[in-house]
Image (cartoon, rainbow, N blue to C red; front, top):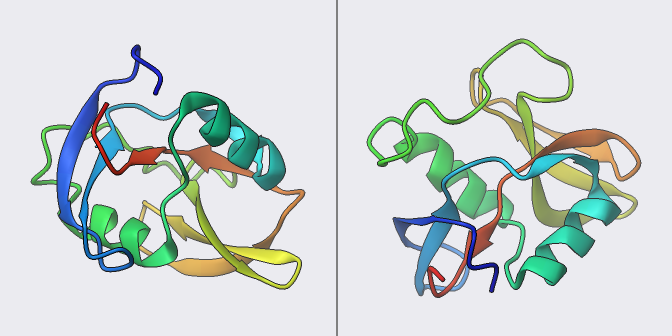
Length: 118
């Protein structure tokens, strides 16, 4: 696990049914393959689409409120999930909660999650 990352408890994952944590800051803007590699190197993972939805819903009540990009940036305001659909991956825009499929080669923000919180 990346000791430099700070983790914030989100709640019980709708995917794993276990507690999960979100990184306090964005990691970068990357294509999906690079995002998955970053997660693996960090000892973390990308959130499932359901977890990303939970993070979005609770974003103002978490200790990290205001840390998500909510600009109209076509890259930075979209966050990758780990949920694939063929050659596409689900992403969510934190400006308004919109969800859509993105090609893997597109770039989006990366917010890692952890099952242990560090």
